[in-house]
Length: 300
Length: 300
Image (cartoon, rainbow over all chains, first blue to last red):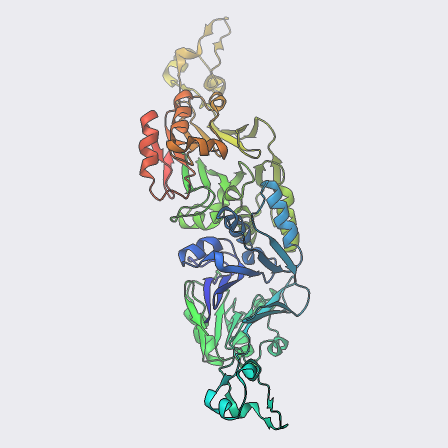
């Protein structure tokens, strides 16, 4: 299962019971936390997300509404007696900030905490079942988007065909990876004759905070769900540009250009109490859009 | 009016919808924030406390559950366009932590932010209507308690008596301060003959986090309300001592020894879902005890 649960969907100032950015991606038996605004640990409890299953935390950038919750979350993980390593990925600076706070509290964490600095587009995590990569977006300070991608699933063997073709069971792993089989007589049996393609892996992309940046479409082509920030409605395009944010129409245009299957929008400015206009405007450009609502899990 | 509104009454790990330590003291037209756990800015909004009226923030110590909310609160104050100076009092280290975060966000605050380092018992604030002082308590790291005290109110003049005694209006300010009047003939009119004492100023004391420390009673003698931490019930006295915290009976004993008029207890361990046992145990020793409940304002 690949799904994303929204913990916070608001921009800098919490308002209308909307919280700063945080979301958690479920990847089979692991959770990946993307951004960690103030109060994330409370939101995890509220929505009954198991924090012990989080091994990777991705921080897009060092504006407070995207990471001020990490100190409390990491501290609580320690108080709960976590022993598993935790990996945090962010632009430069976060490790120094954290270390200063741990020192002030005279605190030793009972688990290894590894910081990884984001500097350019790169693969961050290669697990058997998924990959995570980052790419730069365009904000006032260094900021990154992320793609979380299930690895391509192995092909399915059709056993009766494989056995009839005389392929030994010892070659079945290779068949699943798509290799052809050549027997003792030098005859080759094409993989496609004895296997069928499995469903392809799902892809989730996260783009926040960023001004309208069409070049990121190459990074997020054909994702199943694209999360893109929409801090403002379309009439405030100028303000959005000044503040390195995007509007509804711009986010939806990125979804069109990226051939995304579905668009999730969030990071709403606290100047808006009502969210329906965001949905209506985005749908004018990209119909398969949803609001990212706190507590809701969107299945890919 | 002197009152205290509880924003967070739990210890380190938020639980059962109880939040880390924060409380706001209303002093006529000003607010003083004591401690600022994660989520304090959301709690201020929830309980409709005007953050613009906060000019002084007192941080008892640098364990995260007492200050991780300050970054978000200060940042939001900036985004709301605050221009009035803000004063933060804490043990050494907080300024460096804050500056590193502001630098990472490339953020300039639109108001002057002044840090004051607590090192020993001292008067921190002397305003026309109130005083704030701090005193050391005993915790794993440097930690301070606070007393907020209305200044003694001026005496009330009884106008008909003052006029009958021939005291000119130009001396009335001096009368209010308690001075006697001497007329041209060298006759002295005692202050008490023409004035009456006004009600005395109220005193609020905050003691958290600390192990049982009877010597603090001299600092908090005869306060109207004593807030004292009660992390554990009385049966865990040994664990409380090991972790530099207090039990119900210990807090209540401090209230007795300090001749406090009323005791408020809080900083409950997240191991307890029910709070009633805290109240029952504290009342065994000091009957005029209340639980510090979030969202409730206790009037002095």
